[in-house]
Length: 179
Image (cartoon, rainbow, N blue to C red; front, side):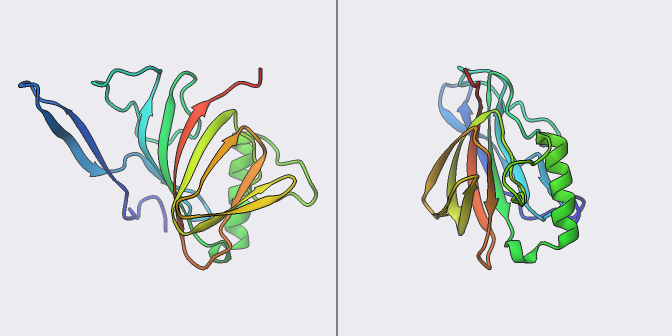
């Protein structure tokens, strides 16, 4: 499937206050923007804020394309759906590895390199909504199931879906420093 074949997107409902001061639904529709990675992983931005604290009247600052890192003083909330690893062709895995290197630099690390292993300058609070996924570190791994939350603190990591079903997660990414 290509980016032009639109998948079923997450629904985003946003509230606000009407001119009479009463709470209302201000928007209700599919997540925008979204992108599909070479592996078939679907990434949908739900909300983006350029700076914190944010006004309760502010709108999402998401643009027309998914930008993987959050704004330097803000945050991004997104839903990601990972297909089963067994459904990913070697060519798609290689294309994904190349795209990761373009974004996060060479994989390096333990030999052989774990596909998708990367480091971000972020704190990521990730909750599994449906399915299960392995969080793989340079030294160790753990299985996360629906309802589990992982706080990923700028460490080298990769995600592996060893099941036979897609897994859906929601992640809030915050910029971080190493000082």
